[in-house]
Image (spheres, one colour):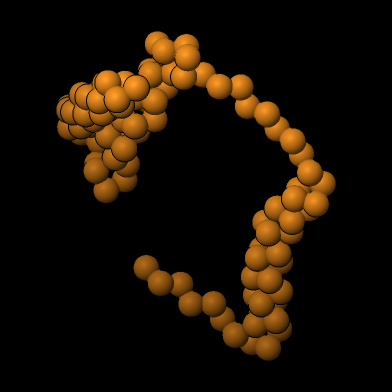
Length: 99
């Protein structure tokens, strides 16, 4: 198994260099997107593609209570921000935009 980890590191390092070279070659601004950050995901995909024993089945046991809590965790912050915005707008506050 340790050699697979070393192979993953080597593949990721090579892909990082290739993506950095590609980004410089096509003059893609590093401030907008950094292609080399995709290297670990590509390396992981290649390792799973070539080593079938690394594939594990994914079991999804959907618990209604956990699904409800997850949905609440997504909706509650958005709702609180919306309420704060409308209360501020009602009392005459203007949102500040920092750039």
